[in-house]
Length: 91
Image 1 (cartoon, rainbow, N blue to C red):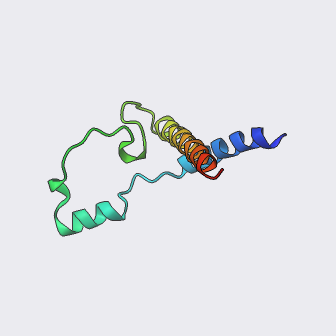
Image 2 (cartoon, rainbow, N blue to C red; image 1 turned 45 degrees about the vertical axis):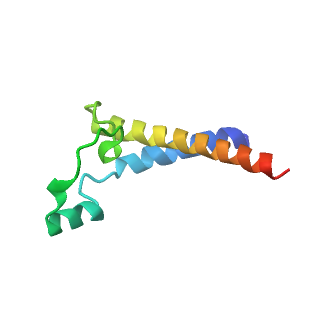
């Protein structure tokens, strides 16, 4: 297996494994909001990745997995753009 293939397959494998362990429990920021009584004061916003998943997909595993893959894609695009900018100005 060449390096480019491994660079694609490995992150997808990690996302699959991580999505198996995704917690439905609130994170620390949510717990603080609950404890200090300001959880209901948050503004309602439309979010594509609400609770680290796609809200319009009913299967929790598939929803979390696709959100992880989408996040990897966005990070890859951000990396490529940043890399091109650095190379352009680094000449």
